[in-house]
Every structure is written in structure tokens, then in C-alpha cells.
Length: 425
Ligand code: BJ8
Image (cartoon, rainbow, N blue to C red; front, side):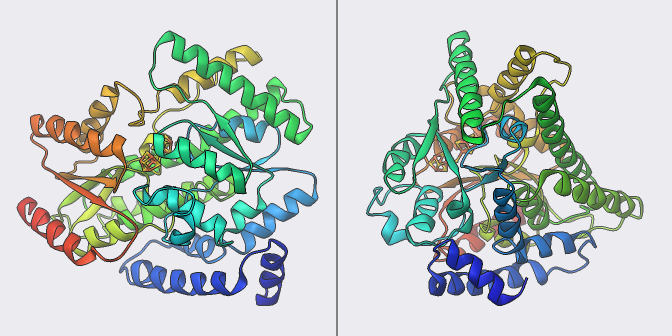
């Protein structure tokens, strides 16, 4: 795509062209510093670089082409929204969570200052007219997870009509019944939006497509257990981030290719860092693109990240939907059960997350865990204390970090992370 074609497309989406250009410039530099400076990167990383360089270009063009063919685009903020159902209606499913500080002052007109950066970011992107994904959506889906998001959607709805799914806060039988009714309500809403009927065949295909994507990501997670680590945490995070934007079939094929390359590297004992490099697991809040601050700080401190226990990581990929169902009812039940296994900190109690973090730390042979909470995120800050206790009982050290998207605390983070890494070496 030429520059002028890009510009024309963004103009049609009513983006603030000047502010958007400035954003792309900053992002390009940020990406160059954090990603292109890495040594001994995989060949498969070319795909990541390409997708990222065209994240506001070619992918948006594809969304517009899909719309021209009569397909709809659905934007979401949470891994609870069942992508399988969106795909079964031949619609496109994209993530709208944002990981950059943008439009903060505007966002603070709608939500209080002490709101987490993730929420302020998606509101800021909308208000400052910076996100071509949000502007491309035919339907935006929010959900009742944390209080911050619940209340933010009330305000967001005034500037971007938002359909809300009610996610329960417990995993009792009554909660499951509520969640099932919400999954069915979503299905009906998607059918209404697209004008298409979701048949059992279509739903089965949707389940298979999303399972295949999750299986490719599970494969990547498993390969990262190798020592020396075959891929940097930065690149692996980027893979997970891109999984929310790219076409699922293309993404799956590319990530499987990347995993083939990783297998060869592992066989050759060729790592991204020497075998004795301290290995860390990140755990906690999701890191939406382009939130690469902490991974960069960690890997610049002489450690390598070997896993992400978050929704842009294993929380979204650990569980598959059972594919044995044939009828609509059986498949809906399988979806309901799979989604209710998500161990988001918004649930009470949420003890399975504690087991999952410890298990992942062991499976990835992590020497330690960095727990990451966004400032003002109550659910994950609370659970940081419990995760710490659980890991301590297993003899796994943990460092708890609370931060946001600003760069002001980078030096302070560096000092803390370096001191932690030193204790592991
Ligand atoms: S299933 S983690 S994607 S809700 S960081 S907005 S929790 S105050 S993102 Fe999430 Fe769904 Fe759960 Fe996953 Fe609130 Fe915390 Fe902000 Fe958060």
C-alpha cells in the first residue's frame, strides 16, 4: 500500500491524521529500539515485523475489504467474548485493548484519574481518533469483569455504542447458567448483526479455527521450556499480541512455521541468550500492544522471559474447546465450560490461578516470577499477595511490580529488576 492510499483510508475512518502520524512515528522508533536491536532473532520474526509495520495499514485494508463483501467487524476488550461464535457468523473478531498512553487527558473527562492505564488507553484512543480498529468496528463488545471496566463502558457507550456481556464473578452452578444464557444472547446478537444463521457446521468450524490458533500458541509455550531459551520474551509477547489482530488461519500457519524453526534451534542448542541466563515468568495483567516496557526492562537486565501468565499469554491459550460435540447444544455447552475455566482475577474465589501460575513456572523452568499489576488494578494487585505466598511455598522467588504505560518509572524499574535478577544468577 502506498502512503497516500494509507492516508486516504485513515481519512475515511475519520482519524486525526496529524496526531495519528505522530503516534506512528513514536511507535516506529519504540519498535526499532526494542525489537530490531535484538541479536540472533528468528527468521520467523520477519512475519512479526511485517504485521506490526502494517498493523494500521494492510490489516485495516483487509477489514474494509471484508466489510465491502458484506462481512462485519466485531471489536472486543476481553478474552471472555467467544471468538468461535463471531467466526461462525463469518464476521471478523479483533482485540481493541490498547497498550500506549494516548488521549489520556481526554479519557480523564470520562473516567476518574485513578483508573488503570488499559482502560484509559482504549478510551483515549477513541476520543483522540487514533485507532483505526475501533473506527472500523460494526459492533463493540464490552463485559462486566472488573469495576473499572464495568463503569468505563457506561461512559464509553456514549461515544461508541457498546454491547455488554455479563460475565459472572463466581463459578457456581447458577453462575454457569447465567454465563450460558449470555453466550446464547451473544450468538443471537451476532446473528442479528450479520444477518446470518449460525449452523452447527459453522460453529464447529469456528471452534476448530480458534482451537488451532490456541494449539499453535500452546506449542510455542511448550518450546519455550527449552534451555537455552530459543525465543525472546519480547518476540513471544508480540506473537500473542498479534494473535488478537491478524487473520486466524494465516496467524496459525505462520506461528506453526515459527515453531518449526524453534524446534531446529532447540535441537542445535542455539538460544536467544546463553543457557545460564536467569529465566523469568511474567504473571498478571494483560500487556496489550504496544506495551513492551516491562519485557524490555527485564531482558535488558540480563534475564530472559520464558512465559506470560496473562490474557495476552497462557490465560487465553491454555484451554481448548472440546471438539466432540455435534449438536448446537453440545457445542454451546463445550464453549461455556471452556470459557468458565479462565482464571481472571475478577473471579472470587480464584484459587485455580494460584495453581496455574506455580505449574507454569515449573513447566517453563523459570527461576523466578515477576508479577505485573497495572496501577489502580484492584483484582490483580490483590492476587499478587496470594501468588507471592503460593510461589514462596514452592521455593520460587517473586518480584511484584505495579506500573502504568508512562516511561517515567523506567529507571526505577530497571534498578528493582536488576537487583532481583542478581539474586537469581
Ligand atoms: S479475562 S484480565 S481480558 S477482564 S488491568 S481493566 S482487570 S483494572 S484486563 Fe482482563 Fe478479561 Fe480478566 Fe483477561 Fe480491570 Fe485490572 Fe484494568 Fe484489567
